[in-house]
Length: 476
Image (cartoon, rainbow, N blue to C red; front, top):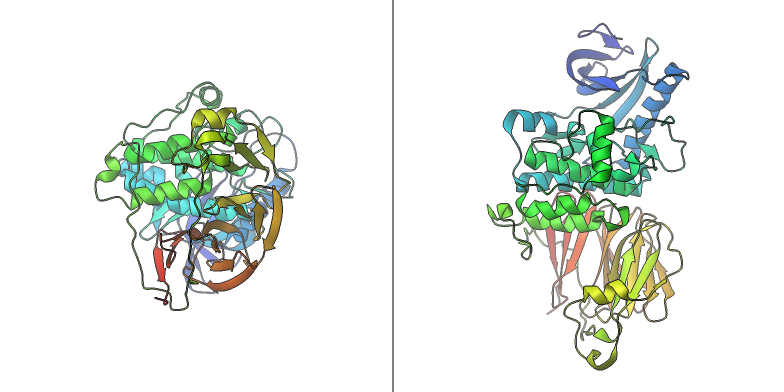
């Protein structure tokens, strides 16, 4: 253990004051005397479980945390500068966030408003999307690991994160992470998956608006029992945020809101008129868009014609965690010529299903063309796949994004596809020729949603921070 304030770590970092401590370590405000900047320095504690080489385990965990955070490179995740050793103890040197942990804010100032909680949730969700696209599962999303500064919310402490392809550090009999924010599948001893982080985010948002944990318990076993045996509680003060929280906290992984779905719902709450987010109404109104100047390089191709989706073969594509696409078909018949305005839940629930060939990279997003003939999927590997919806066969593979593709949308005439990526770019694709039309960069961070106007001549791109840029075609 260090001697405290004033100690010089690794000959470079001067400790100033303790910022906080937990089960895995203590974080200090420090000064980098070589680069003349303030940093956060985290001293790692030895593991508390029995057996094994505790010193070696501590070093492995420090490297794991640093590597996990370094792979993400997202404004919503803390930046790691260095990993050093001092007196045989590993230290992680990180970006210093001038802010307070969410749990400290709630304890001192009271619960957040639904709108503010939605803003925090959207920023943390962006970090999780970037982490999952990089193969990292955090496993410890909780109020104490969400730092809220003046300009942004940041997810910290990747100390028990798992990296795809690396061995897991968890020891038999131990469930890592805070019990009250542990997803049901993890409480059962199953491996953590990206949806586990989303459940934990839902529980964190519950705490943010209610001021207490969703599943209180006298100890870890009691908490796990409650999580596994009871339905998620409905928050009383969440207003329009309640469906998002309960959707993220569904017991079954397959039933949970996806990250892409949650992004849309959170953005809608943020864009509501002042005070409307407290209304518990079930339907969210159309998004009120904040616009910024048109991107000068954006010209949308002029298209004509618009297809109509009919009920002849109502087809729903569901993206599941395995990267499989499941198809559900409704009946045709006398009603086939009428547009499908609403989907019948009973029909969908009893419809036969078929499965598309395995989709590589695990899809983040799925979209139909307006006429229902073409399906586009995109995922963490940065590729977009086009399928013939009737014949269940792949038409083309579109490449060009440097990182994960988070969202896709067809133009109203179905001849242009827009895609937004983790790399902050939006690309327009010619669906007929399967080629790229143009690429532009409307955001500094991941693009989480793209939407065409009804006439197909304008396009909005939503960034991870909620900023919406509006591009308008220069053609009449």
